Length: 411
Image 1 (cartoon, helix red, strand yellow):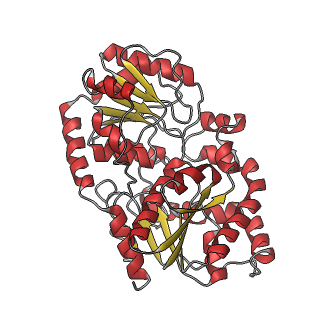
Image 2 (cartoon, rainbow, N blue to C red):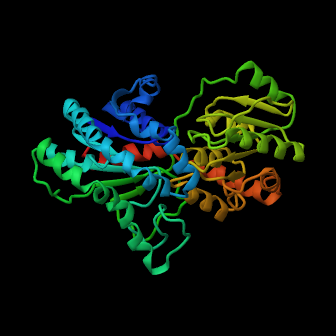
């Protein structure tokens, strides 16, 4: 079977789909992964056929406009603030997604919710789709509101709120979609309205329980981890890890730097007050360390599946991938969300008792950070994190997803 996967976003929006692609390839399927051009080396390095999509959207985060939007926003408001910059880029993205799908000639399209082109491509090609998401929110439920919204519950409005995620992209970009359908796909301006044949959610049911009002065409598979079993820490990191107690991991993934030097200073001061050691990952630029004292070791990045199991706690942004890795490692967390679905994962970690209350990025300082990190030493939180980690480690998310896809297609 020929399967085309399309995804958009940061590293956390790409890495799980590489894991899924490899799982499908191990079963003998031919797979192409379309993703922002910045990930060409990462995807191809795992032996997965790659189709480059425009990287302008991802690059926006590192522009002054992008940083300002992230600094002033919460949840998905940063994305709305960037709409005027995004709209002019949409036609090129739609065209590139069409080219990638047309050239590969797939039997099935698997897509991230951000790929609003995919349902239209499936209509043009006459093939089924599978919606694959690292977070819930694309299947209506009364159990919880859309993760796009900063509320733990909206009561009777929970189910209705999910329409925001399901229809939001099509509404925001309706004009360019209509023109593109007519001019490029040679279809009528209005879509067929057909939904995915199957929806896969790539997270653990122990983290977000499966709602009772979801049908059999929806599966919560467990996380899609992309492990790096051959990774070994560099000599400096290895020596630091061996020189004392397990350190605290601090990293904010692909998030841009808003005031990276101040954040770095706050982290160093917070850990010093507690007498704790720290491994700080500078990643996308949110952290910047001018000079690391003895209790701090600075890295650019490292595979979370290997590094987090060597640490005592994780301070991070609440990205779906980082949260998943910390959960699997069985360590407590401190979450300081920047944007998107990060507040949702922060709320889930707090509800599960593996993290304290989320930190507000705008008011974060050494005092609040020290208090939050100190809470991770509490025996109950450590026990709950260890128990949840043991459950997550029993799951085979990729294997479950592949089995569901094969069953859908009669393989």
